Image 1 (spheres, protein in one colour):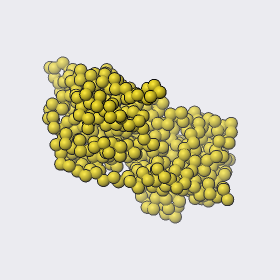
Image 2 (cartoon, rainbow, N blue to C red):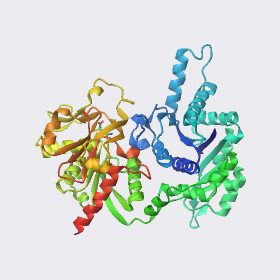
Image 3 (cartoon, helix red, strand yellow):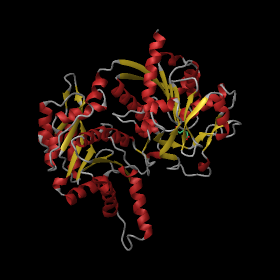
Image 4 (cartoon, rainbow, N blue to C red):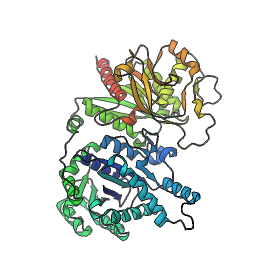
Length: 533
Ligand code: GLN
């Protein structure tokens, strides 16, 4: 078993997650069995109760774990589904340690950060390593070196290197190379400081990932190598790329795979670029469409990360470029004019009432103007509310999430959610089977009658209204296994209007994009052509 730990220095937000993902991608496609672990040093047990404004989207795995969005990147780059064990938080570690203490497992001893917390960290990492017989485990440590919160994790990794042996463990450090002045001179001092902070806790990096706007100059590389004791071949330039899927290529060209293979004394694998075709389409799309993404966190694009990525996957597959027009849903309450310039509308998931009325307006616009529409989770529920109000004439139709006293709760709490008080990890979560009716738009999109998709919700279509909705033209083309939970809706007379209770974006991968996102983009292209004519 080999381990590669990735730490960060200087500032946060340097793209450590993308670098870790890219490295995983290169190693997987060089023939190794690879998995990746994200360490989040915060005290939250998981990302489930965190506000998208602070940490971006909450990503959901097959097993129902609510995790950091970096796990989404790992899955997309490794092309493998991970589990909740791949996301370690301080909260998970402490909970386990305290539970053990209560059970008396440390009887007679004082429980301490070193060794009790650090041992638990190492145990959790090794547990992931052993699962599926991996060759290499990448461990990304969130935060920057020097943070109080990440200290126990760095200490655990330092200990692990000694225990696993020099040949089986390496450290990579991600730093920033600012470029300043009119000459855009690259400055290596922050890197020097950051590496000395790392050394002061006993960690010597084997690789430096130098994040800069432009490729690292020969002098910068030499200087970094000299001051950090990392050989020049181990100093890797991470310069700006048009999108993240180009990063593995840039790293590969600098010889990173052979550097790692030599350092960890592994059998050399040869890298196969499975993204070649995709990257051509991304670079030279044959057409372009504009899609509106109507949400309430539109200033923070990371809140909709998986949708953004799903559209890139669609372009990679179809050659149709997607320009996302970010529309703050509240703005649609006064005017829907901003929707005139797009050819398709996506209403993604969400919680709470703010922004919902604007989303309903967007759906009304899509339905009345026959504009392509895709609704996801809350977008699915909002489509039911819109239809109930404007087609069935139930003026007060609403979700009991937003209006608990409404006389027409067309969206209502899932029965099993009744009485649940805790908010962490208690929704209907994770991969569940969806049965698709034949002869429906959904069956044409998916080409099969059974799919597994990831969920994250507390509310559903109220079974009492299904009959009336269907009579008026909604087709519930997908249901859960028991047939009682509505999963997909479409309109009887439309080929470009579909919404899903599940989050199709979470399973979108570069080579197998989310089928409903593909359909939205293809429909948008048709719509654009027909409105030109
Ligand atoms: N708030 C809605 C629910 O809990 C939708 C959730 C979502 O969009 N993820 O059911």
